[in-house]
Length: 245
Length: 226
Image 1 (cartoon, each protein chain N blue to C red):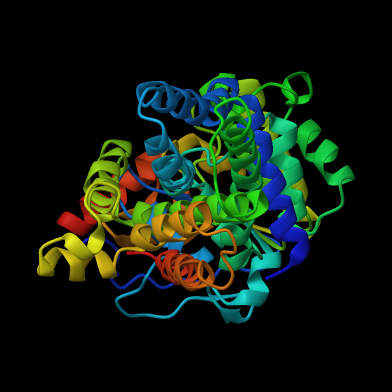
Image 2: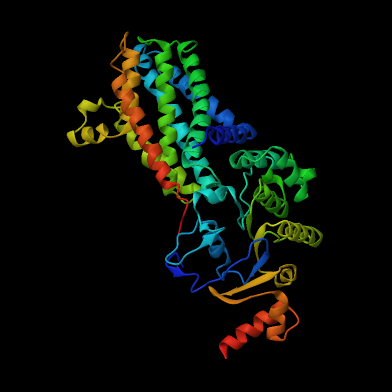
């Protein structure tokens, strides 16, 4: 890989987003609106928002990044720009890290906005330090990005790519411990939830919101989230073939 | 060569001399694109060998030395022409002044700051062609670069190709428009995955006793059938 090409790719992705005002607005505003809605729903139920607010703060960037990345990568594959890039001196990592940098930056902005809203006006009470909350939210977003990148290889149309969201994200959401604590799930589902990355993303968030000194408790699940992200990126790189049939 | 379990190219063998302008002609579906993909090294081969500028097709050092234009314009629709070219110039390590040069070469000066998605089909394919002119490619593989273009522009582009060939660049240009063949130094005629002629236009016409390439093509096919 070449830093010059990686940076150029990140800049290019950001410039593309800059031309697409509506997507940018949706990316930044939708999580905030949803969190506000949630706060309102639980207005009379006091501590409930405190326990689910933080995990959801990690969830929204995850879902949004998953969607945006899978579509962006699919477009790169179907419009021929990927084939062109792969005949040029561009390393696969340049492309993956370029997307990672651009969407990572976007994830930071998105998570910062959402966190500022939740911790400020929406009055979320978390035990742990705020910056750890932000860190976990950004890493969750990167996980969503890496999974989206990898899975886009299995879609040949945008219709299919969008369907991956209910197919891949919703089961993880159901089993991640937000609805039923994972240890209370039927045994088979508990084992299944053990191998799903979102379970750990939510676990790290729960740790941060419940424990005043989350060190080193949240590092375990966060490490798993990081591991899944790297694995998905490596698998994603393997799906970028220079030669195709 | 087998693509999607269908044999696309069978027993095709030829050499393109350096610094020449070679046309690859044949009807739609005859295997032109697959052959070009094999040359730029993005096509998986069932068997056979493709060597480009003395190296195996698709090997890493070639990625600085060749330009490839796919039939469908491959540029980012949500970037302007200039932004597209700047990005590809950065990837190639080409100087920024190259961007302005290639914009002028393909005649897009007036549209340099328009989003490529808003351009007409012909303008978009010129933006795609401009990308391949960045840097100093020694080999240009152009898949139907002149489809849908205004005749004046088509002539200008063929002039550009001829000038590039004169300066030592090797060009392989495909087309299904037979009269573009006149502009080539050498012709490869493809039909149903087989190479049916590999000659200079003059020799091709002389050998078939015809006056244009379309006639020559028909004559060869008829002779093959009888």
